Image (cartoon, rainbow, N blue to C red):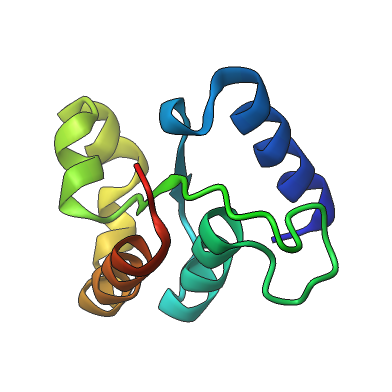
Length: 107
């Protein structure tokens, strides 16, 4: 996650309260999604960005996870996301995101 996006997430969590912020990722690989999710939950693991040492504990999901799919309009999901389900390793993404939520999310 680049420094600009880290700063945006940090500002939103401060402005609206971390309990009111949900971050949805769309990365094509589980490892990339997991690293970004770890950054906004447990802090920047590279210790280089605005979230270095900042444990926001935010709720995090990937766009292909069932929880997200159930929360959005089915027509929009079908149009915007469903095609990606065919080419991504959805099970690996779900496993990675679930692990990050279990380990670091507070909300």
